[in-house]
Image (cartoon, rainbow, N blue to C red):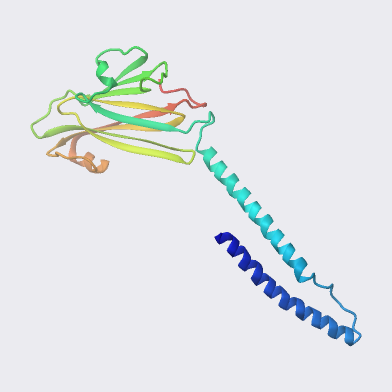
Length: 245
């Protein structure tokens, strides 16, 4: 309704201006005719013909704009999808040992059927990384057990800051987990498809710090006696790369 009123006002204003110009042109041609001067310009189209031409032009412009907007929207939606037609997705979850999850079925000290196993040790921190061989939908694509088995004083706390995310095809996601490893190890699971991203395991042995959530990584590093980082590239179901082995 608003658009129709706008078009009506535009047409009415244009017609008003055109009629004024048209009358001026007619009077000028009549004056030239009375003086015997041959008209030097073509006669203007009638107001009715001009009104039809104007309405048709506005209608065609409207159709063109709608077509361009629809094409742009379709392109934006399509660029958010992978070559296989699926939107990129990355999901990372953290579980402590008292939280009910699929990780309760697994022992991080041994192999898990359907997964390859890799152990990363550094300064008392240990990361046991399991990567799926089958890429089945019922279990995570990757599972990581993080623990600390080094010595700690009464005011020392081993922390893990797991930072993850991706940015591709006009889509993106990111997140951070702050995990206390002093009492027990904790599981991280990684799932997703059609995505390239990262998972950074930043570990710290802090003294006198009881709350880390929200602290910048630079601050944590300056407050820790031991610090380090282990980066895991994520590449799930991408045409140019195989999944992480």
